[in-house]
Image (cartoon, rainbow, N blue to C red):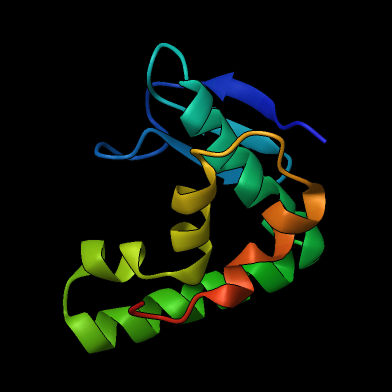
Length: 111
């Protein structure tokens, strides 16, 4: 499964290159690098495996916990297990859907 991609000037907010809103990747830059596309594809599979709504509930919960713990929105974002997994896997090729969808379970908030 590959995401649909849409180039936009306004979403995501400045400082971010792309955002995956199942099944679409919205991106600001002229084009996405292979690593950025792989990162967003990992999020696509995470969302699919958690039936979309489950992903967003967990994502916001992890972010809120991180925000309370670190008092820093950027650090809270980087400590979300979904993000840690996607940043790790964006450098790898030949990933399976299972790896992309469930690798995040190996991470803990703040690891």
